[in-house]
Image 1 (cartoon, rainbow, N blue to C red):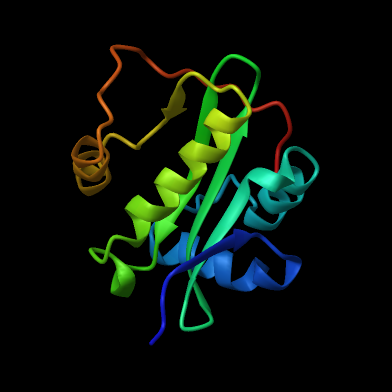
Image 2: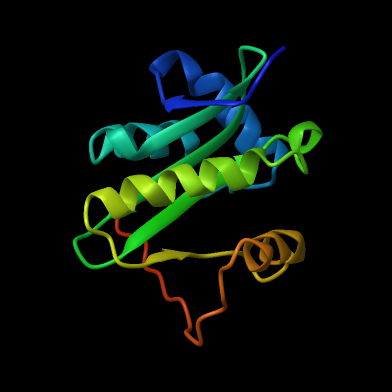
Length: 141
């Protein structure tokens, strides 16, 4: 019987990970997913995880810690594998990794139109912070 397994991202996972991001609507024209992977591999690569089921990559998560707050990016589970607990398991795994290095709080951003994702995060114990997110592109992809 197959079970969900969490492991570190390997370069051989690149195409599968990008496919997950695309199927889950995480990619945008202004972000080159290959460059995003390269950037992550140069900084805390040990916090870049994939989830596998039946030897296929079906989930992905990039965690990070800046010494003050943890961050989660590119968290996704292939649509055909959602609602099986894989997302919750991957999220809890990453949270434990962050706690182990002293991270007191995990932040994440969700696009305002992604109601399904917001519902998921609420179900697993996240609350909406009363903040406005700002961003500034420093390097064009």
